[in-house]
Amino acid sequence: MSLSVEIAHRFPAFQLEVAFTAPPGLTCLFGRSGSGKTTIINAVAGLLRPDQARITLDGVALQDLAPHKRRVGYVFQDARLFPHLTVAQNLAYGAKVRRLPLTGFDRIVDLLGIGGLLERRPATLSGGEKSRVAIGRALLSGPQILLMDEPFSALDEARKAEILPYVEALRDQMGLPILYVSHSLPEVARLATTIAVIDAGRLVAFGPAAEVLSDPVTAPLLGLADAGAILTAQIAAHEADGLTRLETGAGPLWLPRLAGAIGGQVRVRIAAQDVILARARPDGLSALNILPCRVSAVQEGRGPGVLVQLDLGGAALLARITRRSAQALEIAPGLAVFAVVKTVAVAQGDVGAERGSPLG
Ligand SMILES: Nc1ncnc2c1ncn2[C@@H]1O[C@H](COP(=O)(O)OP(=O)(O)OP(=O)(O)O)[C@@H](O)[C@H]1O
Image (cartoon, rainbow, N blue to C red):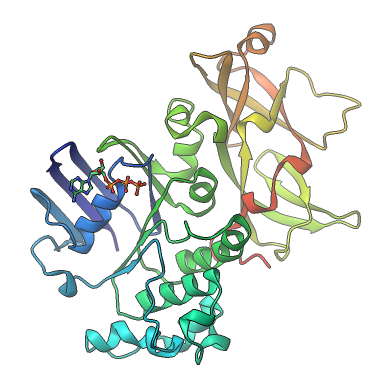
């Protein structure tokens, strides 16, 4: 199921013109405040009638349909639950309004871990619980696509960390395309199958998450401080001293203990600023993760830093080093180097589930 979007719209002081086709999975619309992300989502939902639009879901045109005929589930920035209804009644609401059978209730309640909340009213729920119920309500309205506009922006970091695994499960298990607005790069790195970078109403980068995040030309558009690539790796062992060994395409990577089962796939975000480069395999170093790789691209910025893209057995990693170091090491495409990643530099929140291998 893929979503194709072509929208042109003019507000008095803003012009939006974007076109993209989102493949199955979770597509993140990423961009700074005011770049046009919500306008795109609203056009897909039918809450905004753009000047020009062609929006198709699996080839079926949506742009002329009234919002209630579009079969889209919308999760807003605030949960917007009905205060006078119980959780169970809130969940059933969308299907009732659309006169659809309430299919998959138990599965969705299980997936979101809200079985124990069904008789409660929204006022008694925590922020994270409200968010999960709002997702459940959207899923139970019989949608063909799920739209999520910064659904967790009201939650603090700890609550957000608790809820992201549910979104991963949703992405991997429901087979429903998701359009997800965010301006948090770690969140995008964790969740996105595809990334669409929006800047001032234009699409400035688009592609598979691993490619967009490891592209040294795109990275500055995303925010240099948060630049970092994602690697898919397999959990090989939980070791006695509290570390988990992952297998990457270029050798083992040790991280502080992860919750997933051995054999499970994880997605690990490695910040560019946590990667050190060496010409020879370092000896007598406390860092455990020394990965042989090859420089595939070098991008100089305006500041003192340089972004180096590394080919790691087919996967890509990004390192941010000073121009002075890059010159001293004669960093250039084709050069074989060793990437050093400190084990404790990878935060637990930067490791997510991949392809139906739940963590925890
Ligand atoms: N109804 C409207 N009338 C006039 N201008 C609007 C309207 N809605 C949005 N805009 C303008 O369009 C631009 C894009 O807004 P939009 O809400 O899509 O941005 P966004 O990327 O979702 O931002 P944020 O991350 O802050 O939610 C902004 O400059 C906004 O002021």
